[in-house]
Image 1 (cartoon, one colour):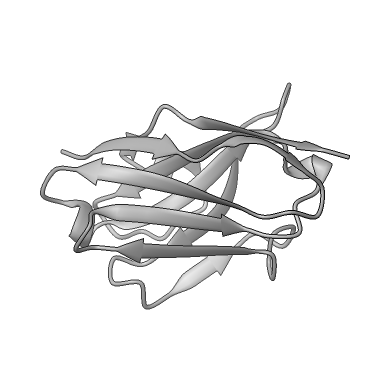
Image 2: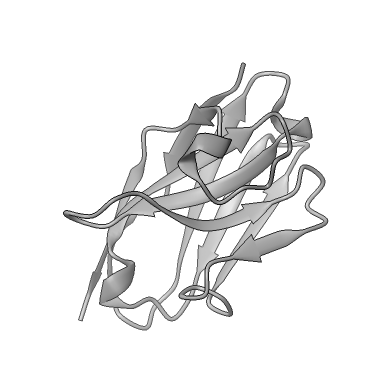
Amino acid sequence: QVQLVESGGGLVQAGTSLRLSCAASGRTFSSASMAWFRQPPGKEREWVGTIAWNGGSTYYTDSVQGRFIISRDNAKNTLYLRMSSLKPDDTAVYYCAADSLHRMGISTQDYDYWGQGTQVTVSS
């Protein structure tokens, strides 16, 4: 079992940066693939990016490639999402998710555990 708690969201201006954190508890974090998803207002939850259990591989959706970086610190049981050059279209509730089966997928169905989300609002 993994419990996930996101933090770091807030209201920021376009062009600035923000770092989200996802604190995990439970034994399986260090062996789980992790992902960030987001849900814009009135839209479905969408995949942002995924990181392998050891941080060796990362993948991103095209709209954030080059602007967002996912990292993890397994010693601290924490996942991060560094967001730069933020745009109003990045406004969403951001969720972290864990996949104990290492599928490295982009679907919500590929992830077993979810946090409660943190709101990011980017003003123009």
